[in-house]
Each structure stands twice: as C-alpha cells, then as structure tokens.
Image (cartoon, one colour):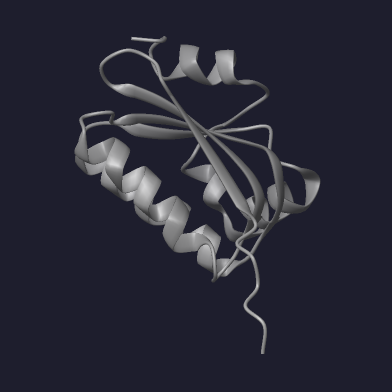
Length: 122
C-alpha cells in the first residue's frame, strides 16, 4: 500500500516575545494532527503563549485536528496565554461551531484583528 503524502502546511511568524502566528493549510486529520501539535507545543514551550491560528487555507479538519486545538487552548491558558482562530473556511467553521469550540476560543476575520484581541503584536 503506497504511503500517503502529508497534506498539511504550517508557516510560523513570530510577533514579539510572546506571540506567534501560525498559518495552517491543507488537511488537519489523524495523519497530520501531530505535526500541528508539535508546532503549537514548540511555540508555548518557547514562551509564545499568545497564538494566532490562521485557518483560511485549511480545507478539512476532523476530530483529531479539533483535539489538537482544544489541547493547545488548554496549554496556552495554563501558561496565562490564549489561542485565537482566524478566518476558518466554511467546512472548518461548521465543525468549530457544532462542537462548541467557538464559545471558548475567539474567531476573528483577519490576523490583525486577532493580534489586537491578543494584546497586539507584543
């Protein structure tokens, strides 16, 4: 059986001492969730407790991806930080709303709006 190529792109931009913007694209599922988890854990480990996730290029997310977002939010809050979600695609937004994640994790129209809500570019 041929191995499936990983279809998740994560780009990280550091914004000040304690803020990171991660742009996530592709598919966030059981095969790619660990990759995003590693990126998020790395940011929090390095003191970037305010994380903005730009989901505008994320085409698909399953429960594994949702679990990564929930765990990252908990880790950020434990470190006195937060997670902000930006511009999820309609399919991803629906999952976020159905599961209630949008009640604990703010959604924003764009990265700048999320950075402002997180306290600026710090």
